[in-house]
Every structure is written in C-alpha cells, then in structure tokens.
Image (cartoon, rainbow, N blue to C red; front, side, top):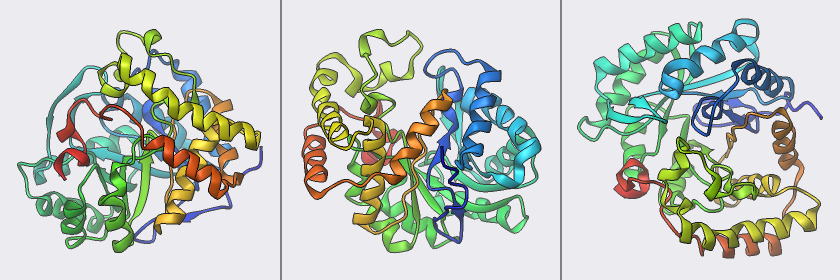
Length: 334
C-alpha cells in the first residue's frame, strides 16, 4: 500500500489533514464487541498508511475510545491530527440522556478529554450536537476561549444547520462541519454544504459508507441486539429492501472500475466535494486493517459523468430517515 502521508487537504481556518480520516467510534462496542489490542493495531496501521486524521468523541465507549487513542498518541502525537467532541451525555450503545452546550460544561468537558487522551492540546474540537437551550454564540464563545488558552487549535461543529453555522462563524472561525453525508444521506447538500462552501469551512462526512450498508456487506436481519443500526428507520425491513437498489448501483459501477463498493462510495463523496466547491475529508471507521487499505484506494479512483449520474439517480430513491430522531440531526431543524 502506498503511504499517503505526504498528501494533505486544507479544511477551514488553516487546518491541514490527511485526505481520508479514521472514525474512531467503530472501535467501541457500538456494532458489537471490540478487542482493545486489535483496535490499537488498527489505529497504528491507519497512521502507518497515511490516515493521520483521527476522530473520536468523549462519549464513545463512555470515554474509553479517547483512552484507547491515548495509547496511539503516546508515541505518535506529532503524526496525528486529533479531533474529539463534547456535548452529548451518555453513550451510543446505552443511549443519550442530555445535550450540553453551556459554557461551564464546555470548559469541564475539554479538561476530561485532555486527561483521557494524555495530550495538552486537541487539534480540532467539535460541538457534537446542538444544545437548543443555549445560544450557539455562548457555546462557540466558550470553545473560542479554549483556543486562546492553547488547549484547542481549531473549532468544529457537528450536525448544525446552515443558519447555526453562519452564527457560529461570526463568533470564531470554524474549520469543519461534521455531519452524515454519503450516497444515501444527501440532505446536507441543500443548505449546510453551500453555507460551508460560502464560509470557507471544510466538510468531514461521518458514516460515509452508510454505516456499512453501502459496502454491500450488511444484512439487517443479522444485526445484533445491541447494534445501534437497529434504531435507524432506513435499516428497517421494507426500507432496507428498497435501499438495496442503491447498493446495486454502487456494485455496478465498482464492477466497471474493478474496484470495491466502498471505494466507489468514498470516491463519489470526494467528487461531490469537487462538484460543490469545498474540501471534503470522509472519516470511515473500521476494525480491520485491510479495510483501511481498501478505503485508501478510493483516492485514486476516477468516476465518469455517466457513472456519477447512475449513482445520483439511485440516491434519489432512498427510503427512510437517517436518524431515529429528526431533531437529532440538522435535517430535522432546517
């Protein structure tokens, strides 16, 4: 596998990251049990192959994901662009009990994350979800104070609306918006993506492979009882069956290019960034080192206009919401 460490993408506010990132949530028990030793090996392999933009959050594994990444940072901090998040109270597997965006919570949350991560600075600090009880200017104002204190280098926002992004940007430069975006989750293209492009903000799509669905390897009937995807409407029986048409279109293009469905799905996202005028850095997560190598193959894939049209057409027919709670994501507040 070619090392891609020399390649960088400029998000917003001067932040430079690898062309693909790594989503750390996959290394917590969200989709099943995880072996910590294998998880750390996966992280090291990511950095070895040039995937140096590592994304986590304080609630992944109740903090255990940050603690896992601390083992990577202990020897390789200078090789990693580190992103983490605050605001959610709870865990992905057990559920969330609150969202906190008040200034005292922001200040306390960053100290906890710094301690778990074993570092003195976070490269990109995200507001994980919007606390609608608190003006976003207060939340971002508290985050900006962390930049002035040297605890955080850049600020990010997750699942915000275009209006929220504009208001936040008036308080402090925003380096990146992180929201779900993929062939089967395109609602952000209506308002949020154009606003990010206008403001010079980069986009970091999470679940760029549709929580595994777009790889063609997910059988909803076989998902475990604790699998987070059981709560998402588009993974339900009838919707899942209808959405197989998207996978079929991706497989068809993959066959033409002698590529894998995952590579095609990622290449489509990268092409969307070109088409819509903003830097896009997907953060697929995986537990397997071989998947990291596979995902990197997307960087060299070129989709033809005909192939892009076929994928766009398939995307238009997706059935079911991407979230169990519409208010949970930007789509529900637009």
